[in-house]
Length: 179
Image (cartoon, rainbow, N blue to C red; front, side):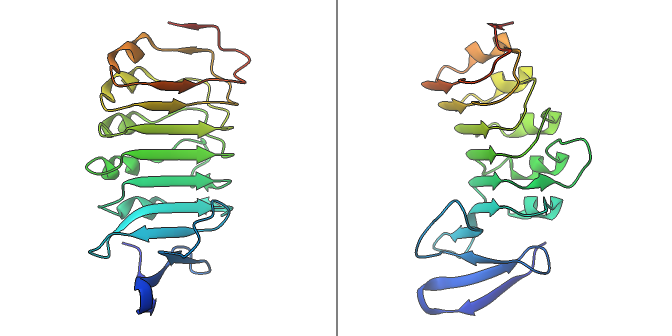
């Protein structure tokens, strides 16, 4: 588990030391996608995490058992295959929103299929080539944003997502069909 250290009790401000060198501000006054920050709920549980411009996102980042929103920007995952780590499955009970931006992930692991509470998926400029059949498992999905990738097709299981209201697929030059 990641060590949590309280810096200032006023306004429930805290910090998480993720990588021995980077302090993550929790409950910042200004939420900017170009900084690293986390948001806490009333019980001081980390419910939102924004990781920006780190060398890598450690698998230990998947230990937040109350996390609802995860955004990873310009940060690699700690493997040479450019795949989201299997540990993402540990966020299944709570994660509803995932966004990965300007980070290479060419494929998604099967363990991601366990994130059945996902309502929002945003993968922008990731070089993603294949979106797996398990997209049909995300029955709460209402927003799917996959612009600026290398998708060739979408699986037919996408029709299982009856709550899906908005899909963004621009700038996928090889996307020609739903298979």
